[in-house]
Amino acid sequence: MRTSRTSIWSNGLIHLVLMLLAILTVLPFYNVVITSFADPAAVAKQRFYLLPTSFSIESYNMLLKGSYIGRALTVTALITVAGTLLNMLVTACGAYALSKKTVPGRGAIMGLIVFTMLFGGGLIPYYLNIRNLHLINHYSVMVLPVAVNTFFLIVMLNHFRSIPAELEESAKIDGANDIRILFRIVLPISKPTLAAITLFYAVSRWNEWYLAMLFVNEPKRYPMQLFLRNMLMDVTKMHRDDMGASLVAQLSDIYPDGLKMASVIVTMAPIMILYPFLQKYFAAGLTLGAVKE
Image (cartoon, rainbow, N blue to C red; front, side):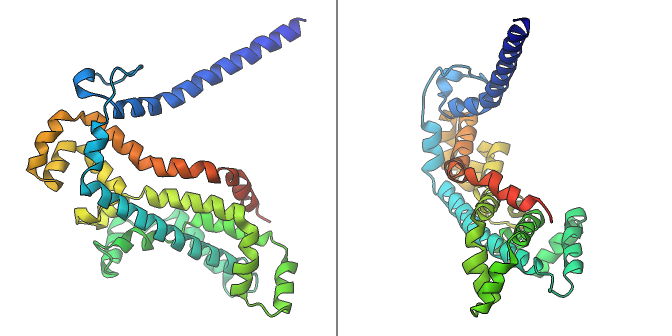
């Protein structure tokens, strides 16, 4: 009986701790949401609101009515779609080729690939290389330099190695070449791994801002994340520079923190909508390629 009561109390304590941790995890997001709908006249100088004291969509109206936000979202959508497609094409083709033991110099190539995970040339050589490739102030500078992620390449490589060789041998007997085998046999049976890596790539491209900050000089080419970063740094200054002095006066009626939080909600909404549909592939996809033979 004492053991049973002890077990009940211990389980109750564990559940209580987990509930508190869950509340602490959700609380910042909750604060972001209610702050984005805050009314500046009601919230005054408060920084945190446990219960909503007002409701206003002026921050969203201000954020979405200008062409600047649509332009930034268009750039982000463009580099997300194009970048993810390029990422998956290069990663899948590279991993499939390196999974073949008959490829000459496979060990040396893998050594060079792993080397890039440990060492880098530095920011100045990186900038000079991008400049020499004439990618400065071009949309492709946010896609081409990150065409492949070494970790995801290794995960997919290990998964391809786990596929029975008899499948490919039977396809070759029927006259299929390597490209046909990859796209008609290997990739269709690798959907969990492809879905997981695709989502990781898409999130990375959607959150792209660092390369744009380094190599893009025209504000009209800024992706959404760089636009958001500039807003978080100085809302008033950014709008004075990019939208004109006539709109600065409107900002006096907009809650600055509400505008920032509305930007956060708008930015992460597409990924939050996409995530539940691909979540089931995460564990299966990464586990399939995480064990090396």
